[in-house]
Image (cartoon, rainbow, N blue to C red):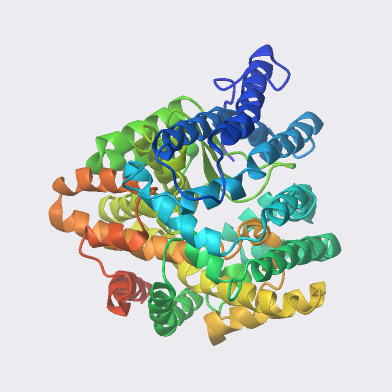
Length: 581
């Protein structure tokens, strides 16, 4: 790096984990949580017939839950922000564990709350924007165990799935590998996949695989634990398979997923053309895994942190002054932790910290791909900004819609780079864009196939690290095909998504193609589109995905809709092939 990269500033939330301000907020949250049970008892919240008094009870209970969740946002962000950037922080780890245990007070009440909501009539209680909450409660009620079983499941989760996910995060954040005689954190090793030197990329790939292999036993135990717990509970809750609850959470139907995945599979030959064109540019017949992120073209541009920041803000301003203002504030007020380091988790994410503000974790390296990633995460920050006036229960949106603003931001920045930079920079910029899109279409589909296979086999027994590696390579071969000469068997250990929310994969493809469709609407409608776009972002917690899509004339159950987004990517691949020639 040519300069020191920023670390995020969490002090606007609290001065420290041991500060009086944090202790006061912690006590307030405890009191709010403890007040819920007597409130539930007062209104006899639970599985009973609806009463006339439930109109007032509904608004009182919902108000109390919203107040509690609002109070929890900065506390959760502050604690997890310390854990995710320094997994050795013992005080932060202890506070995270205490916070999770404290929230059991709410988790124990949720079955009662859900059953009560399922019996309420939206009009009679004047549910208004909460109507979807009641509608979904009726479905959830059909897939609930008894209340004692649900409470026990919530309590055991802390020492089950949550603990396994924490183990993966802690173990993976401390892994290092030696490349070029230098010991590096695994996040920095993975960033070397962007190196222009094929020897460095290959050495980093070999070192990375060896590092994951050295830690495969605890990581495989974590994955078996997470998926075993989820599968057991899904069967007890009478979901027909492990995918069905994920579709419900994402507010889409099986028909929508099928239409999208048909379009994905039909597009795979197109993506293999891209991989083969890139291989030719690198002087190879086929790409190796360590070439997927290799830069191509003779780019003379260095994307420093300052230059990338300015570019993002300037280009967002051409689309939405509000989106640009949020990005500008994020850079100015140190919302972003960009420096890769030991003890910090890999990847990138954005989290809300309250009042519409955010913090972004990234692992920046001087490439356009990293600039694009920052723009992507700033889209999430803008989404949080648009939701600032919604109460917490109406800010709970599905993963399928979570990527809407991030894809828009990313597309604006990429298209601007292709349009404004010198022609000789076009190939590397287009390549960086297609790199990311290939991950979201091709690699994400391999992750879906892998996770589906793991769930099917895990229902019978635990899987060994060797079996997990074999399933991963099978899934990669099914999507990448013979365009690659080698694969990454330990991708199951790399991605934290497998250890958190089940099927945390297909929503990314949904988000990309839905976002491209929205970008197409913006190109056609110009500035008139932006107000409708902001309203969409503010409404994602209140309507199913298909209903929001219909506002723009989209039919999510139609394969043609998804092929429309894929056609835009196909044009970019054709452009890439032409530039490559």
